[in-house]
Image (cartoon, rainbow, N blue to C red; front, side, top):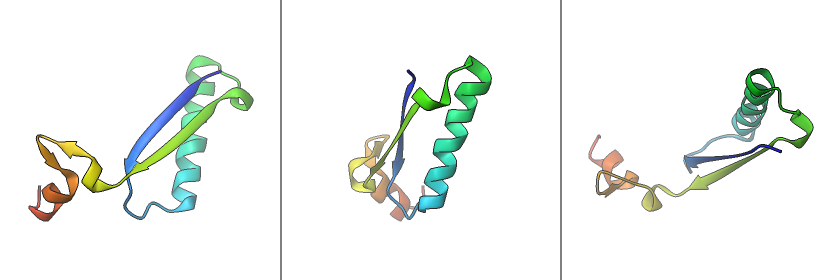
Length: 67
């Protein structure tokens, strides 16, 4: 039973986009590893940009600085 956890920043991702991600990841596991799609779990966690850091700065700060 595969479990995939996708973490993205919370920035206006639509329900349709999330559904496409879930379907696409599930299909990759079916195609590449032969996994059963009925027992494949994909979880999307949306993280506020204030709570995601890269290179010692939050994504919020980096985006404001144009990085």
